Length: 288
Image 1 (spheres, rainbow, N blue to C red):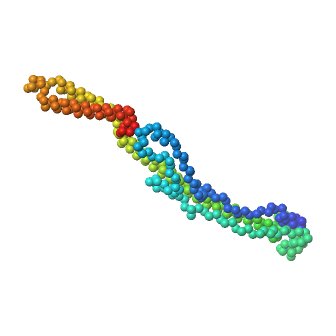
Image 2 (image 1 turned 135 degrees about the vertical axis):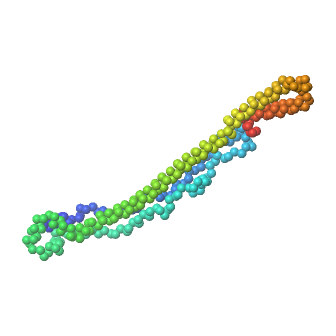
Image 3 (image 1 turned 90 degrees about the vertical axis):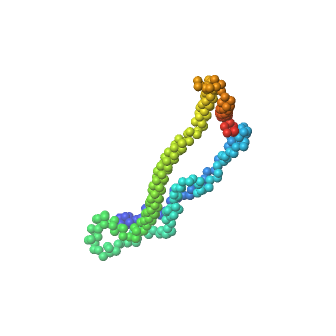
């Protein structure tokens, strides 16, 4: 009886589990923002293009060197998305100081330990107890060594509960950030659609003043001016009508008026031809 009781209550074979309550590594969500990327090197293509084209030396050119990025400052007119507040981040549970674990050894044969419930029992009742293995096991758990053997397991369970609480807090924070990010993505998509619509309207409004349309109008104006000048010359050279009292001869006033119109038309035609020639040479506005 004593051997089975002592063997069932022995805790020497149990592993010595030490409670580990080290906090988990910091989540990438709550970490600090990464540093801005370094500026790209200045390309030397701009200097070569300017040196090869001498006529553009007086034209101001924008520098292609990107400005140094300042964290937290942007030049965009749109409102910035909300940044997660540092107060929302969960604070890890501080590890509790480990108490020294002194296991209580189970009783040996020399101790002759008997549970207090069996000390006043008669022998006939003890025979019934010996034949029941479940009762023997329950009596074995009354020794203090059994409770002492469960202490490391209880500490490990408590540490796991703390880790579960931290993971739950991180999960709730991640879910909130995911919802906010989804709302920002939807807002960004709607703003992008509005911007594309406005961009299309602006392109349609500025299309008559585009380079291709302006060149086409210039070419057509040259043809119209040539036709107008030709019609003016032909109408004067055809002579007068039947009811003309000057017998087909134009007066001095008519001749001066015709010469003036011819000169004005020819001047306008030459200006437009010169504008087209400058356009074809790439010298629009005086710049090559």
